[in-house]
Length: 344
Ligand SMILES: NC(=O)c1ccc[n+]([C@@H]2O[C@H](COP(=O)([O-])OP(=O)(O)OC[C@H]3O[C@@H](n4cnc5c(N)ncnc54)[C@H](OP(=O)(O)O)[C@@H]3O)[C@@H](O)[C@H]2O)c1
Image (cartoon, rainbow, N blue to C red):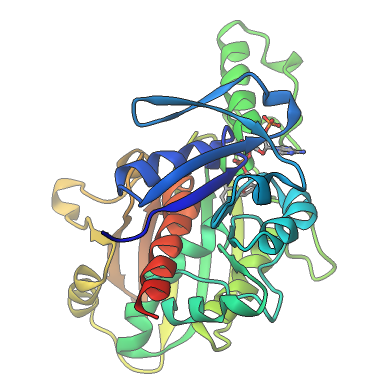
């Protein structure tokens, strides 16, 4: 019988943490003991794992050692990972971190299993494997097979990102503002998660602005893509928050070294792992946020050549940000890590 693992989920009752538990259960991850962790505020609360309810424990320096944790999936925010990941590593666990804290650290692999699974082997140096930003994961999954076929020379992307990308409170903010709208009180509505009202609006700012005029979210897409694809691909991103709850959409304009045919590119994407092509414009079939809810695949459609250049392609991709953009990718990393460790 193959080995079963003691697994901790840090931030287990957050938007991402709950999805990590759901995906672990769906893929029948080999778990011996599951330990959901959160702050002391959550003591007395439970999380669901299949049809079981498991009590949340408090995240402390010693909990990883006390519980003999072997795999720790962190999604409680960058400052929590900064403070506690080293305790999990010291206790002998591999940390798979969903926050941005370690992503650009040279000694820490940044992994999308469909793109650079080989980088998982570099985990030993730090004990940590970083999960990329949600908008980067779904994009590189679509870029990789096209890059292999035609060699990318430039990527231009505009995102349409759901409120859940900013956590549970942000989703509630949208719902409350919609309620206020229907009670004719939208002008008095509060906003905290976003810089402006999100209901019936779109906000061309995600995270803070940097000196170069781009936001931190946009530069994450630039820098993380370079690290994951292992070469610099010129990329420009415009990241926009839209009033949806779940499912990030992205419009991509891709430029290649060679000429590209849209039908061939469609076939290439159909063969790529965890990509589903939905591209039947005659019947108005294309991916939308609602298509992606609770799914573990990235959906691609509106695949078309450029009107002026034979080396360009345009497409529209959608994925569930809490799944593909966070939980599913983290669990796939954990599955690959287990596979590699057991081959040793
Ligand atoms: N949402 C996304 O699409 C997405 C995608 C990729 C990565 N991420 C990253 O994942 C992280 C979590 O995001 P989220 O959307 O799940 O946020 P969230 O819904 O706000 O959940 C935050 C979780 O962290 C826990 N937490 C907060 N402070 C803590 C502390 N001091 N000690 C222990 N646990 C603490 C919370 O537990 P309490 O309830 O006890 O406070 C809760 O379980 C963030 O770093 C985010 O950037 C999010």
